[in-house]
Length: 185
Length: 185
Image (tube, rainbow over all chains, first blue to last red; front, side, top):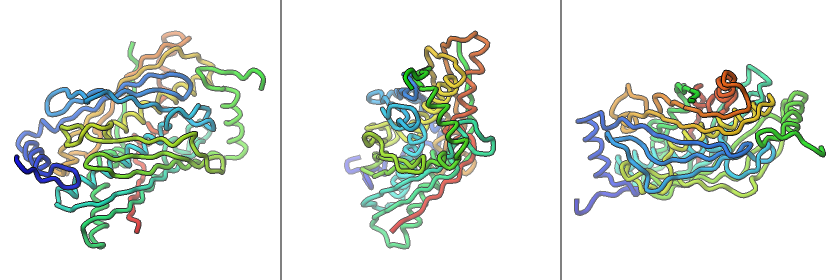
């Protein structure tokens, strides 16, 4: 198309093309995301993200992404990277934000800025195996958004709720997702 | 201590000191992890991780961590960083790995290598709002581990299962965690 319609940096023509393609052939919407991890030392390990499956083919990223995780000294690491539960907040923040941005674009709402801060509560008694009643993971996560949009104030609440309504990571964390862990020879 | 006991890069003396401190004063185990996110353009946004609360005080990281998320071109982004659901796999991989490493250290089991690969299934009909039956997030995640340890083969299964048993991110994903999303002025 000569002049694609771009809102919030999202090519809305392409977005609706994608929606229409999925409607006529739902199988193309089947995606498989992948990661490889290698332990380095103590709390330090590295995840590589290289490719994913979608639209019935393997799709390599432009370049592989390498993500170091570690623990801070207080948790016996060397603070080489964010720790795993901080990566979980990152996934959630990024996903809810992108869901707001894409779905606002689809509705023709122009956003000027989107900022958020997140807090999540963990009681380490769970991880340390000191209590069976204390969950090992987050007890609760709170997200606070500031949004500036070309929309009346009373519309902003509706815009922010596009995030939890459509976000895959929000859904992954708030619903119980089955995860299998297997040993390979 | 002059000669701390280090197993798998984990200071096991310190680990047991931590466990004993938490036993005598559980309040120090109350942690709050934090993240800030700023939307940049389209599917591109950036999360900053600066500090966390734990052991009854604020703890800054040695340096702030900045993590770019984006979508690949197939999902209308520019592939500047991993996408949010890939960050979720990163969090899970890192956390299950660290849980194996720390808990093996606590049991005195020396690990030589830990590698894993992860796959997660997502049907984009959920995110696109095309079906109410299709979940927006992961339908299922599979983790495959290869572990080399100074332990008999029949012990390896037990070692790998330390991961899902203790991992906070495994717990966060497999249990339904409440997440609130609020608009701030």
